Amino acid sequence: MKLVINGQEKELECGNISELLSGLNLNKNAVAIELNKNIVHRQKFDNTQLKDNDKLEIVKVVGGG
Image 1 (spheres, rainbow, N blue to C red):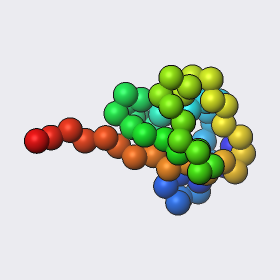
Image 2: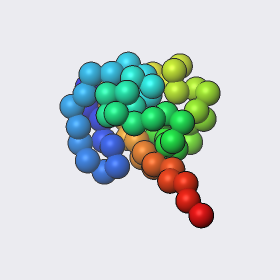
Image 3: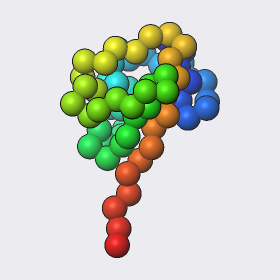
Image 4: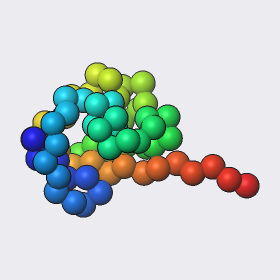
C-alpha cells in the first residue's frame, strides 16, 4: 500500500501502526504518531488499521537532560 510518512511517499506492506513501526525498526514506546492529522494514542497502535494513501507523521521521542 502507498503511505505518506513524514512527507515522503513509501510503498509498504503493513496492516496496522504496530506492524508499520516494526517494519521501520522503530520502538512503539519511543514515538508519537499523527495519522491523517489526528494523534493516535500508543494503546491504539495495534488496532489502528492503515489504508492506501494514509498520511502519517512519526516523531521520535528523545530523552535527555
